[in-house]
Length: 290
Image 1 (cartoon, rainbow, N blue to C red):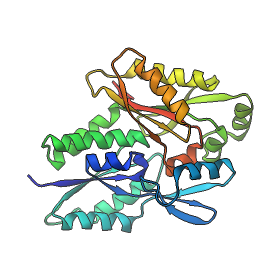
Image 2: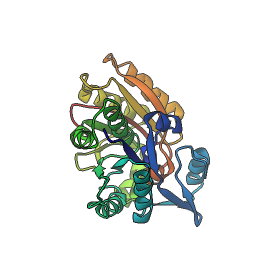
Image 3: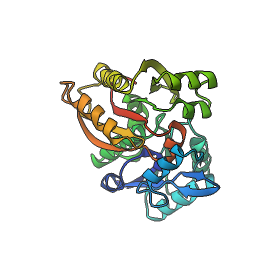
């Protein structure tokens, strides 16, 4: 059976150690602060992740850019030279133009005589992408072909659910996902929105509450309500430089009595963090439905 490589964006927010374990190839996204461009490596070697969030707290604005077509072409050609076919898992097309760059690159190889490349719009972000990558890696490990893995992931991605809350509404306002007046008054009133990634990969507000701990409890309740016990019994928790709150959510989830374990607590990387801001906390798990 022909080997194939799994290519992900650095917005998967996995640790470098887990990336190696899952045998993933990373197409790194970029972010810009104070006119300087940084590559969003999973080990944050261009700019430390805590330093990144401190800059955001100090008022430095971060912008982001996708992997361009030529970069995707280079990655595909490199994997082809190794004798591998390619499966690309992209950050949600509803959140970034990255998917379109990947699609244009893939189209350039559709008539390749020896190798194949498939593209999946994961319709999620951060550790939600990470869970999709995990599922693809496990399917490959079971001996599935490129085509079988692609078809499986195209359906299974809808079982990967993401629920989270943000600490500073002004970051969502800047990204066009919240009105300016709502953001100002919400921040003053300590309103914490509960957000969700929907079936189309969009970031949508679902509920509002006051207070951090209450928001985390709602997220844990959503996990309990939608978790599918027939699927892998673990989940990931991501945080934007608030490990204490992330561990509190971890304890809440593991205390639900449904046998779910949090096997990874990790940072939301700079590319996603630029849009959600410091203090974001999210849970990513395998659900009956999103």
